[in-house]
Length: 65
Image 1 (cartoon, rainbow, N blue to C red):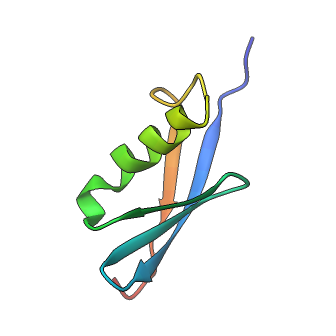
Image 2 (spheres, rainbow, N blue to C red):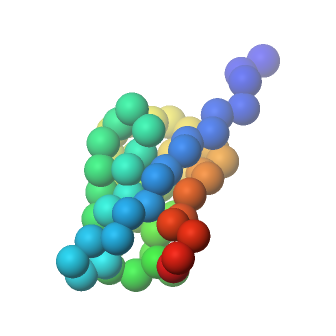
């Protein structure tokens, strides 16, 4: 059985949106917080992650936003 995969993302404010730091994979940008999960899943898919659409995505947003 395959263990449940969880991708941890640390969000940081950027000049015109958000930097989404995907643990051990890289950084992707989005303008809208509401689009963050979709953008991360597209990023994962682009990196060949077969579980990009089904894995749990946990986004750690800054407390002040």
